[in-house]
Each structure stands twice: as structure tokens, then as C-alpha cells.
Length: 144
Image: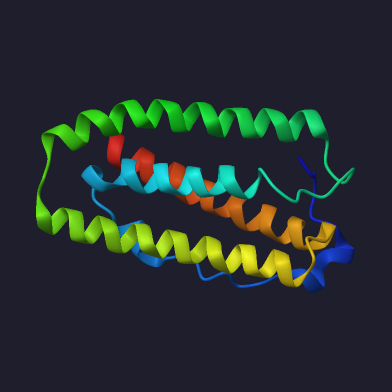
């Protein structure tokens, strides 16, 4: 969407404290965690985007891709929910989901504090790119 990270934005980097427990989720929980993560990304990219800074068609394509993934995961999750009602698993999942929500609250607060500037969005874009790489490796680990 935005190409390379601009040199002028280097001062806008931030440690959003990615929830490390996500990297330790089990195969059974990874689908729900990724679903929550994608929901949060979709909500984040549905508001206050930098006008004119990114290619609109690429941004829309990204949003549509995220939405499609969410819909596909909803099908998987409805099947999983009907199979498993393990309370221990549910507690762990709720805790991890809460960590994801807090993570996105930190990102949203950062954007608000920076008044949704182009550079703050660039910092968020780079953060989320890293997260998507982490999730890609998680999926590969759990499907191989």
C-alpha cells in the first residue's frame, strides 16, 4: 500500500508490544487468534486512513482480502465451536484474544495521539506487516 518506509517517518516508530503468547498457541487455537487479529486489522483499516498517502485501489484490495479471509475463517470456526467446549482451552483462548485486543488498543491510541498522521500510519503498516509474517509462519507450522 505504501511502498518502502519513508526516512522522514523514522521518528514515528513505536514498540506496540506484540503479544508474545500468540507465538505459542496450539493448532486448535491458532484459527481463532488469527480470526481475531484479522477482525482488528479490518476495523483499524476501516477508519482514519491517510488521504492520498497510499494507493486507494491497493488499500481497497487489502481490505477486501482481509474481509474474505474473515469470512472463510468464520466457516472454520463455526465447525470448531460445535466440536470443542473445553473450558481450559476456552480460558486460554479468551486470555490470548484479550491480549490481541489490548495490542490493537495500543495501536489505535498511538494513531490518535499522532492525529492519524501519514508517518504514524506508516509505523502501524510496518508493525502489521511484521505481524502478518508471524502469522504466516504460525500457519505453516500448524499445517505441516
